[in-house]
Image 1 (tube, rainbow, N blue to C red):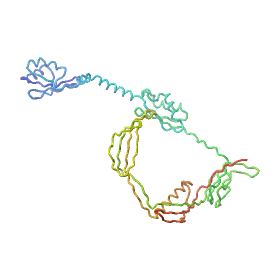
Image 2: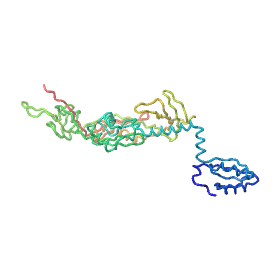
Image 3: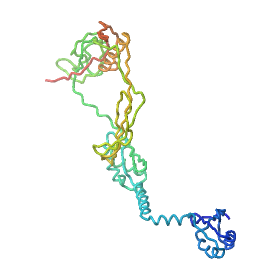
Image 4: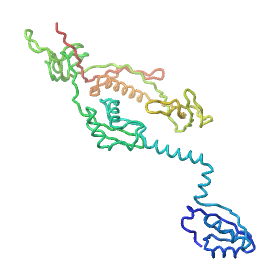
Length: 393
């Protein structure tokens, strides 16, 4: 016979029937309208499955045929519930844990703000709290994102837009601040003077009176663009503005070693993991020596935190990376090129990236003690103007 529907929910048992009239017993069972299935020979008798509701109906049939039965297996929901009831405290713990997990996953655990530069994060979080968005609040009590965005932009001055994004139990508030005109600094009356000796190659006076012209030779401290307008009787002082470039000469004493030592990672590494408890660290994995001749160790702590508080508990991973040292020999030409490149980088860093190196001349060069020594003169076109405040008596 076929297995009846919902047998797992109703419960069924597997029986082993033995005796002199097993076939007569099976015929009597089917004749009584009792459903059995998976009937197969088993040793000196037969094995069959039977619904739990029909189990006690077998007793008179067993007496009639002189057979005996033995329950070999129990299946279905009634038996599982019975086993669970015997462990009711364990079942209650699982139920409480499931309910607690459901409740905890239905709460907001963290709220963070992104995109703000001028508006303090605390002001945005306080406004969000007034709208019901704060840690330990039920997620289902939150309003719709469009309504929250509209209310938050109303409560916080300077916000153009605010968006609420939920990722599990975390809420991210993405904001866009309103554009504000930059506050221009108040400038005092001044001249523009030369900060070094130079030959003027370009001058542009946006405000003020130019005092020198192109190809003029100036010394350090000479006025380039004057902030004084008018004559001796009628003088008006303004903020001199403009741009002045000139040719300036820089002398560099360079020394470059002919051997260069460097290090690089080989890609081999050994990790060690520690359990961190306050100031104590207990190693969990990664025992044994790495066997590296040279190595560098990097630590990556991963401490637990709650809201803005960092707890003294977490994991720390130490990565021991194998290092290989290399030595590279340079020719005199390569050392010279490296020294010149280093000097040019220093010029651009000191005097501006728009500086132009017009020429370079090696005044002296020698090779001694494994190094190349050079004295180099650079002719550079650069900005030479600096401010000089005007003091009125």
